[in-house]
Image 1 (cartoon, one colour):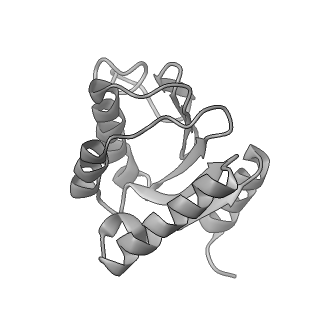
Image 2: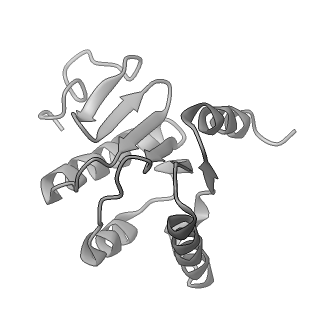
Length: 149
């Protein structure tokens, strides 16, 4: 993780925002990782994100993932998705928000999530919601942080 800007440097804390992958993934304190899929991630970049999630997620009680797909939807290879599922730990992601998904993308995503739940895959344990904007997603994260009323 030493090559990830800001993370892993001596004395670094997770109290300041930093780019995990400059044009794709950004960490925002206290516990949000924001993805903006303007291009496909390389295998090395995907591994960097996974290493960050593996290290920081459990330490922080799970991170919130916000993926903005309003600009572009990058294809994800099936092998990369299967590998992520194999390595997934439910303590890494507390909840996920998808911002700007089209009706078609949302329908496909919901179908895949239902299939993962039927197969009892751990990756399906994190709640996923869809939003039109970042502010609504952040408000939902605040609700989740506070727990059930």
